[in-house]
Each structure stands twice: as structure tokens, then as C-alpha cells.
Length: 115
Ligand code: SF4
Image 1 (cartoon, rainbow, N blue to C red):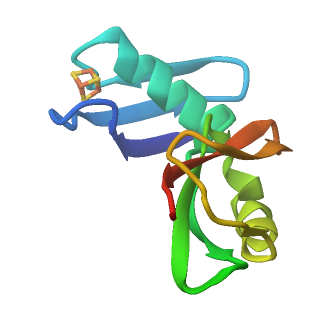
Image 2: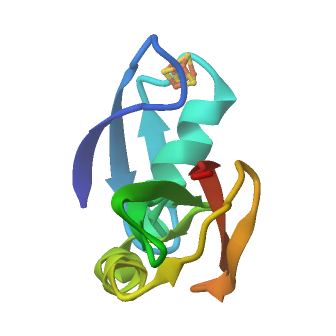
């Protein structure tokens, strides 16, 4: 397997080349060790932070911004979005409030609240 990636860990954006099989991957093009870690994780167990907006049950014209507190499996992103789409919160809600304790291993935290 050969796969080319752009490292998204820092703004330098190194072009990475990952070669090898499931048990042994080699990474070229990384300017620092974080790029190698990113490339191997991306090829073996990709994770993503998901952001979304939630409806506010007592404010028809307001939405609350949320995100996963930690990355969730990339394969679960659409399931996370579907679950968040079905979720409503009740104002007042503040930045940092936890609206869900465990969604694919992550808490859901408010990033923009509603009074
Ligand atoms: S490999 Fe290191 S220097 Fe290059 S983009 Fe990734 S984090 Fe930045």
C-alpha cells in the first residue's frame, strides 16, 4: 500500500508518503515525529472531531454550537451527526456545558451557548 497525505497537525502541511502493510508502515516526508504519528493513525484508525449545531427547545430562532470533546472514529461520523440532529437542549446553555456524556466515546460540549 502506498498512500499520500498532507499532515494537518501544524500549518507547515508536510506532504507525507505512507508505505507498507497493516503490520509495518513507513512514513516519509514528515519534518517532525508528530507527522509520523498522524500518518500512521490516519491509515490505521482515523479519528475526527465533529462539530454541529443543536436546536434549542425553548428558543425557536436560536441554535447552540457543540463539538465532540475528543475525536471519534471517522467511520462513526455520520452516526454522530444523526444523533446530534435528533438532540435538543434547553436554554440557558453556556460554553463548556456537557450535553451528552458518551457518544462513541466522547462527551459533547457546548462551544457557543444560548441565553
Ligand atoms: S510533520 Fe510536523 S512539521 Fe510537518 S506538518 Fe506535520 S506536525 Fe507540522
